[in-house]
Length: 561
Image 1 (cartoon, rainbow, N blue to C red):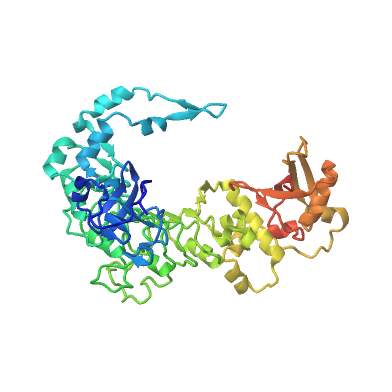
Image 2 (spheres, one colour):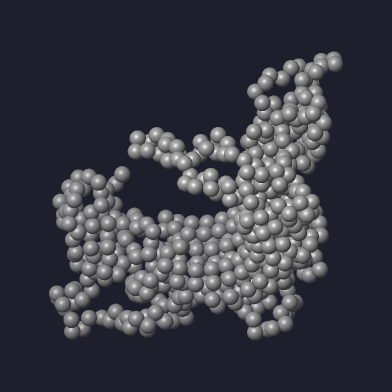
């Protein structure tokens, strides 16, 4: 039960557990943030203080942030509190917990104290024989000497030092008057009034990182933080209603990071309808909502009238479908609510939209991205729609369908890649087309007619005057075959002309013949410009033309593992 390794004595009349009076006098309270003695990274919240049946003395029930405990708040059938997880809690002696230190103490510890043995142990490189070799930081003493003059400090990090409270503003300002960037990641801060006091003491503070500090839900009135440009509140237990309150104190904020807060909805201020747009945030350029639980695009549309918004990070949510609103007001919102200028378009200045690792599986969502007025940088990786194994489409189809994308999944779309992708895409559609209905084609492939005309691609006409070798040669694909398998050996790449109706399975047979690879099971990959990884051609029955392989392609010949 105890976090320490000492054996617990059974309780008895007038029993004494040996805990120090000073530790018990520390007075841990329910809701308090604490860390394990000797390990400031092992943080948690006090959920119970008192006796535990069957054991003597006072115990503190802690719900650990990392979820690594021993039970759910109940022991031997007795429930003392409800923990967040089935095994995220444990009971700990008060002497094995720390209530933390002050901000100024942390500054002195980080910048005036000597490196701890643990910190020195982390300073190493691995030799060629995989042994640790200690390293000495060049000029380390000079840096430490300089940082003893705190008034020169422009940026400071006191991450994971157990900071739980701050001194009076005048004391902080007298010590670090010129601090511009402050990293408080992984501490024990929870009261917004402490954050307000800290910002009030640092008039030059522009960047504040509060990641992994579990903040109280009751946001106290804060002073006007005119200088804060970047505020990081990742994994702080934030709800959007708290963001709305904070907004009033952050007139200059340009970046707001809200990762891993389990956000599901975006609720505007209580005074406006829940379906209305989020007002304010006049200077906000970037919102990071990654690793949350948002599953409806309607929630995201509430941000569509933030006029300075350029980057929206939505990786690792649960979005299944996205769209650009045909009628500007959000569904259920009174017309022109918060829209004095009706010429303004949703997401008018949005240039970067990160949608990786969601659940998007329809091409209509992809096509809708063309309607965003300024969108150029798009991430769609780790969605079903881009995974060929789940029926998704390869990169060249995405490039062709996304007319304005200049960066896709972190890779630049070069003019050459765009041209080749668009031509391949048109030929793919033409090869699979089963209808001449232009409206039906436009619905399924909105850019098909445009791209066909742009690149001057002619319809395949019945051959009247062309026959024999001339007809065959005009339609052949020119492919470069490269062997990459370890046991295949070093072989020169080959260029071959093959019919577009050649299947993947037939091409494997041809490769066996070309490279004399009898008895080796082959795998073929299509190497595309701009793609970080080659595309596995895993359907032996698929014709090359159905895969969108153009007249110039590179096929990698590998062996089955």
